[in-house]
Image 1 (cartoon, rainbow over the protein chains, first blue to last red):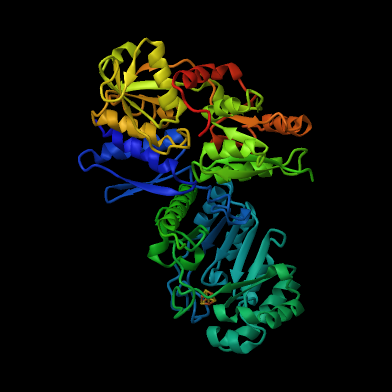
Image 2: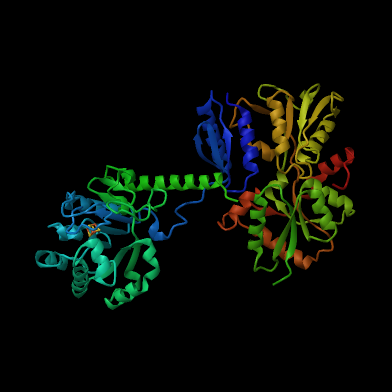
Length: 334
Length: 275
Ligand code: SF4
């Protein structure tokens, strides 16, 4: 039989806690499994939560942990958006590329069939937006089919460096659905110097030209800039420039450079610090697009059923938040 | 804004702050706004009520009985929790003891909670007496009492002394313990740890806490406050966390005959009307 003193200790220690606070109770060595089960049952019955058991000590929270999804903006809830890396090769080789893309990078394409299946399963699983990225998607000869499969099911955003809108590739663009597709173009500065320093000579000029072509073709264009965190204080001239390009303020996305891929510096990103954005590549399902080439952020190698991968990301997110909450309780600063 | 009613409450857990801030928010903007003051023990709170520092005291049953005694029966109970109308004392022993009822305690040791806990000390002695048993410490009487006086002043609210009484049973320093039904629930009754404890007697139901006011408090201020209190709704997600924390589903009008046993017990045991 388990030790009844364990439950008496649980009642006493949690009774002295504010709701949300955590406490620990040591478990006996002999009947540890039994006692863990008892603590879990007691928590369940009394509306508390067993945070975890480590080294023979159970951590218990008074009350249940807050719903981590409730704290997120609706579009941040994992499973609201699905990112798909259509391919990893790129006509550029930016020095901060988070997935190490370049003309030499292997293509690793998901393929039109799988993209169509992903779009179907995503729509069925409650995803409300698809985001296609790479590499440079316009290197794919069948990109228009792939985009059509996506826009047929969900509103879609296509990320591109906008440098390839000529000939056959321009014709692919022209075949895309203008109302269901937004193009998101990378542009880092109001003048060529900084953009070209990271992305290569004349890349700024060609990206700006590409933005104008896409707009002339009737597409809504969003611009996304990747900046070192210290440059966030001097955004206004850049925004003013984007205004002149006719990019709505809401379509001007500025994000910080991440220390991922070939970037030598930038924000350190971990599973704990990132709100997951479910991301599919040819190699598996990842936690976030910024780390889709890093095994530490791999969720599963199985792309299908997509719903299982989404559930797994949500489960891990809840677990990580609960752990972070408990850690905050263990290390109060004042 | 109306002048808020000031409610006194004893801070026996940190959640009391959350509960009363939630209550204050619930009443804010209504016809009877409230604020609160926290006390470290019921003696201090009842003194404050009598001195007019607070309008309403959230009192235990013993604090109610003592307020009645000090006001010559003039004070009023305004409302209580649904759970306060059916409170009980539970007598438990180690599983397999087969004491069969209060008579089974003859010649045995009973662990009691804090001396000022109605459920775990005052009423249990009353029930023994009603069963024809005498009791005392160190073998005096039919039942030997092991009194565990922790958290005195809080009238047993923390439940700590009851847990200590149960520990005494587990460690064979006592044969049985008397505790409030809330503590019995908190340890999972005899369902969570079958083979640990068994109940050998349950008391009749009695009343526990209530909101106590003096007759000087204007009914025009009290009535809308009570009406709004009774309107708190367990199914309303904004109200529910507070109700859960305070341990009720519904506020109800007080059941005054539920205090009769405690009035008798206090009289028999010569418990002082103050502190
Ligand atoms: S950052 Fe974008 S454009 Fe640059 S190499 Fe990577 S995928 Fe290509």
